[in-house]
Image (cartoon, rainbow, N blue to C red; front, side):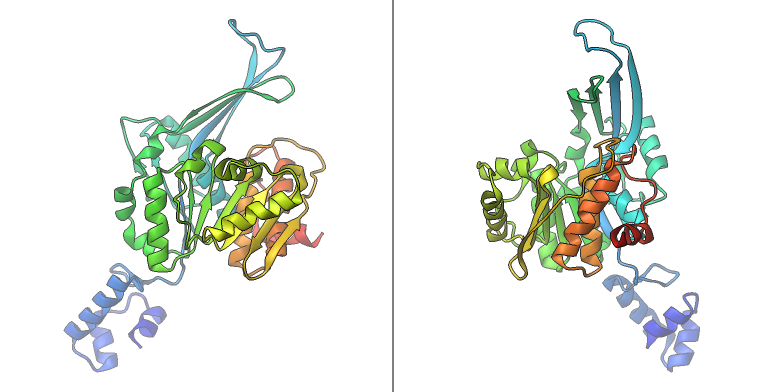
Length: 357
């Protein structure tokens, strides 16, 4: 009853509530205090906690690309064209989901520098950044790629040291936010102990957890026990590295996905480039979803994150596994056609229109 009255008028006074309900004002104060502790209402203005957020935890980088104009020459100066954008797996997913109309909060660690200011300016329209922790003595995460005239990677440099500061203690400062979240998405830029903490936290609070590998070397950050993990979205190389195996054909592909399910993950995707994706769970089975070839590739950056974001979004919307995989493949294809890490025309309505076409 008190909850309904506050919903109708978030600014109602405790005295007004007491008179309406025939209770004393101290009784009303105690009831409101209990609702705040449970997370049902937020703060003194009695803002109702009806909009659960998706919490994205992990990398928020500056992505720099240096395109060499002619043939690359070592030991000397090379004329280049350079570009800079906001990136990072968790941040890219947060922006995709924000553009799709989801309520998203980003938790990460950064430096107190110009790079973070650039990321903040690029990202703040699509996600809440109030829970970012800045470390003045550290550099904001960065990924620098040197590409030849054909766009092929020559060398890449990753400075991800700041993410080691995303510790369980840092996340415990956001305990109330995490405990009332709709879903937690975390990438493997975070330390192994943090991934383990989130697996335990999600299991104990019955909150869906999505694990996002970043690269094959970081697969060692996965906990041994994956019971309670809701989604694992991985690619062929990462799965091959984790199980020390080779995926040579569809049977290997399917068997590898079954291995992930046997470790306790509820839903698994293994993407395989142009060959599409394998998706499955123990209830609906395992399915192959073909890729959707782009009309023309403008930039490959962010396509994997676009796939994962559409998977998460479609799952939260209650779609079937095949529809989930189709949405992922489509968003990845449209992102490949875009020069941006996150395609600028993305919205829930546009994704639905694309799927209809």
